[in-house]
Structure formats: structure tokens, C-alpha cells
Image: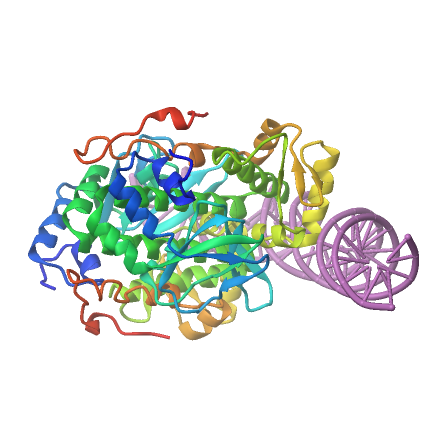
Length: 261
Length: 261
DNA sequence: CGCAGTATTGAAAAATATCAAGAGGGGTGG
DNA sequence: CCACCCCTCTTGATATTTTTCAATACTGCG
């Protein structure tokens, strides 16, 4: 991995070794980076959907506004993520998308992906793996919302972010930035902001999570994972060699990601 | 669509016209049909994952057993669905899979899909569209669990099944079979079976849903959809022409599926 | 007929939401 | 530099929703 690699190339190459040609194809997906501002809404429900986008800087979330005025935050996107794959088969957006931070995104039309299907089997398979992992995240979130207490939900949410930041190497020191208000966290967890506050207070008393403004310290990540009933297979098993046996596809060395659990 | 078409060919051809070659490729995914019994567990969490499967008869669900002994049902699979795409990037199953009905399934290894990527751009794109639609279902379920009351959840759940059965032409007369116990419904909705029972009772009083054993009558589907705050775009918009502009891919006539909403 | 799984109903308990009031913090304009 | 304001967070009291426990009824089946 050369240092000039973009986020998306780093993402793909964590799954599989890429040819120069593959890199060139991927670069097409990041042709026109756009600066975005914190709070900016990139699209709303029901907007026309004909583009994906990649995020190379900042955090974003997808959301759904409900009839009763409440809001559900569905996914949290960190740098390197691909956004909008849900709507590949749809003509309209099913969820809105908003920036949390200032950041940088690149749009590209659905058609570029179809082009990619016909040019590189490797990239197609990797893309499929990425979608598959994304679905695993979504599934886990679903379990979290449906079956766990407020404490567990919040613990799971924070620990998942901690793990994802770890994976992309964005975690250093015992703390990280969590640029979400308690209201936004509540919207993500299906809880009222008041209850999120109470839960944070309780975590502070238990020395599980110390939150200060937008900075979070985890004195004992392992303990937090246990509270959350966190099983990190859905995050850490996704770099397996899908492609090993096919002649055209090379298995990548495993050095880039330590096996866990 | 010839009458000899299998479920999966019908599924794919609802997105896009298929060549003979495409059909032949798809047939490979249904080589070895296996009879299954009601209640049979096809795989459990943590089992090795190297196969997808298609379901051609009967209903199935994916589930997750929680540490506290409860269970979450994540997805409901009806005939024609492809199962296990979540684990394409994983070496282990993340959820179990169980049959509701007696039925028929066909297993095929992940590698067949990679082969398909390298042989047919059309099928690849359609597959992607199918995955995308599946993700839309999952997202909608998430919103349902996180943001709605028990009444709305149940209404949404039932109405979604009603719509899906309509789409595959499996709905006739004013009623359909819903072969799930109230406990299973609760497991799917994150509710206790007791509360599911109360909610059904309330629906009966409101003449929204009449449930008798495993048969469900909807005197007024529209009213049910309104209670559920149901927006059917996520089910009915997914057959758009993704592939129109690419030379190799033909847009299908729209006759097979009426536009809705 | 009896049995096992499933469904219903009531009463009490638990979890979470809502409402409301106040506290803290950071940016902005004077 | 200060005052003010807006936004976010905290905390308490109360209301609502859903769960749990328990008892009883129902249903299909051997």
C-alpha cells in the first residue's frame, strides 16, 4: 500500500491484492471530491437516487424521519466507507444522508459500478464482500435495538465505534472523538436523549465510559464489551480469503489484520 | 417466462431479460434440491459458512440466540429468496437458519457466485440489485423495531408479508397463511409473546387483522398500512431498470410488475 | 381422553418516555 | 472582556408502554 492510496483503495486492498488496472478503475470512483460542512444534508428521503458516494474525511449518518417527528439514525459512516448501496436497485433514496463533521465525499454514478462489474471480477467480488460486511453491521444493529437494554445498546454502540476506529488505525491513546450529541445517539439507538444522558451517567459511575464533550475514554474496553454482549466476529472475520481458489484472484497476505476472538 | 422456470430464474428475470446462457448459469445454483422439514435447523451461528442457498418451497427465518436465552428473528425468507449473502465475506455464520414449513432448498458454494461474476455482467448486476433490495428490507425492519409501538410493529410486519406475497403472486382470496406462532412473531418484533397476543386481540376488536390459527384475514389492508405507517417504496421500487444504458444489458418490459403507490 | 404446545387474560413490576426546570459551556457581538 | 444567548446536558417527578409471572383455556393429536 503506497502512501498516496486513497481511502477506497485502502479499503479494497484490505480484502485482496489489487492490480494496477484495478487501482485505476477504483480511482474513477473518486474523481470529484467535494468538501462538506458539519450538519450538511447530502440527500433526503425520496430524492432521486442514481449515485453512490465514498467518504474520505469526516463522519456521516443515514437517517429516516418518521411521521411522528422523531428520527431514526440507521448507519454511521466513517472514512473509507461506501454510501448508498442500498439504493442501487431503487430510483429514490430510502434514507437521508447527513454529515456529522466537516468532511470530504466523492460521488459517482451507479453506472460506474456496472462498468466495474464488466471489467474486474476481483473488484466485483471485493465489492460484494464489502456489501456483505455492511449487511452484517446492519444485522448486528438490528439485534442490538430489538433485544438489548438501554445500557447494552449504548455499550454496544460505543464499543462498535471503538473497534471500527481500531481497524482503520484511527484510534490512538485511550480515547477517541465521538462527535455526536446525546440526541443523535438516542436517535441511533431508539432511545430518548434523556435516557441516553442517564445511561452515560450510570456508565461514569461504573467507570465504563467517561464522556467529556465529544471525547470518550474507555478505562476498560473489555468490560464494556462484556456489558454489551459484544461478539466481534461480525467486524473482524470479514477479511477472509473469498477469492483464493479462483485463478484470477489472489489471496492477500494476512499480515494487515490480526485475527481476533 | 416459461412455466418450467425455477424460482430463482423467475426472481432474476423480474429484474432483467435473461439470455439462454444466463439461464444456464442460474440453473447451476439450483443443482441439488434438498427436502427440508418444518422446524429443521439448516445451520447455526458459528457454523462454517461457505454456501448460499435458495429456497424454492416453504418459509424460513434467520435467527440469533442471545446470551439471556431470548432469540431474535432477523429475516423471513419466502420462496424465491436467496439466503446467506450476509456471510459471503465471512468464514462463519453470523445467524442461524431454520425452516418454518416443510420446504425445499438448494445449496451452492460461494465460489459459484464468483464464477458468475466473471461470466455474466447482467447476472452480477441483477444479483447486486437483489442484495440491495434485501438491504432495504433489513433497513425497514430496523426502523420498525427502533421507532414504532407494538401495534405499529405488528401491523408493519403483517402488511409487509401481505405485500411480498402479493408480489410473488402467492396471495389469493382475502387471506393468507402465516405459519408462525405468536412466540415466533414476538421474536421477530422484539416483543414478548404475551404482548403479541394482546396486540392481536386489539386488532381483532378494531377489525384490522383477524387471525385464526395460522390463517390471517385483512378486512381492510389499507387501514392496516396506515396504522403501520407503511411506505411501500422499499418493496415496489426495486425493479427499476438499473441496466438500461449499458450496451450488454437490456431493459425488461415493465409488464410483469405493476407500479404501485 | 389426556397431553403438550399455544393462546388468552389479569395483576404487578420494570424499563423507558415525557415533561419540566435548571445548570453548564462556548461562541458572538458589544 | 463581559454579557447574553443558544444549545446541550443533567436531574427529578410522573406517565406510559411493555415485561414478567401466574393461572386458565384452547387445539390438535396420539
